[in-house]
Image 1 (cartoon, rainbow, N blue to C red):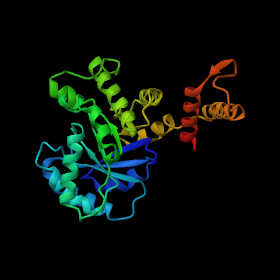
Image 2: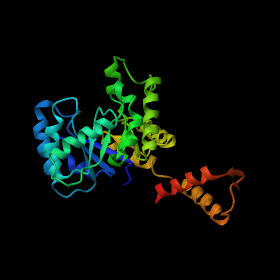
Image 3: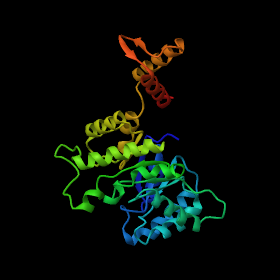
Image 4: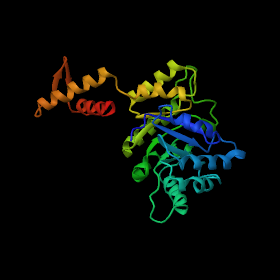
Length: 283
C-alpha cells in the first residue's frame, strides 16, 4: 500500500467525503477528534459508518478520539462494524496504547475477525517521546507512524513549535526525527505531519520535498489543494528514475563488483539500495 498523501476530512461534513476521495489522495482520514465539536460527535460517527458501508474509492482511515478520554469506545462501537481500512490513534504513547486500542476493538468485533491496522500520532504528549522505540514490539499492528507539531507544545506550555520562517524549533525537530527513525525501525511507513499554511503553495512544495529527502514516505494534508503537490514530492522525477535505473543496470552487468564508477562518481551498496527504492516509488 502506497501512502504518499493522507487527506483529513471532518467527520461531521459527510458532503465532503466523496470530494476528498476524488482528490487524488492515496488515503483519506475521516476525523472524529479535533475537527468535530462534542455536540457533533455522534452525528459524525453515524455519517462515517454510513460512508464506510458504501463503495470506497481510496484507502479510508478513521481518526478516533484519544484513549485518555471517554469517547474512544463509542467511536469504535459506531464504526468498527463497517470495516475501516485503518484507525488513526491520536495522543498515542507507544506499544501499550496500541494494545489498549486493540482491546477496545476486540470488544466490539466478532470473535476471530481481523482488526484494522493502526496509524498512531506518536508525539502529542511529553511521555510519548520516550515510548517511540516500543513501536517495534507491535509493528505487525501498524499501518505506519506519524507525528504532530501542535499538541505537544500546548502540552508543555511552549508558545510555538515553529520559528518565524516556519521551520521547527529544536525540540520539535527532535520529535520529528525520532518519529522518522522509529517508523523505519519498525519497518512501517513514515508519515510527516501537516503543513498548516494552506495558501502557501511554494512553502508546501519545499516542506514536502524536504520530508522525502529526509526519509519520510508520505505526508498528511488538511486541504484538497495540498494533495497534488504532496504526491508530486513523493513521486520520483523521470530524471531520478533514469539515474536509479542506470545504477541498477550497472551492478546487474557487474554482479561481482562492490564499487563502481558511474558518471565520474563512486557508487556502492548503499547507492544501489537507494536506487532500487527510487524505482519502487516510481513504479
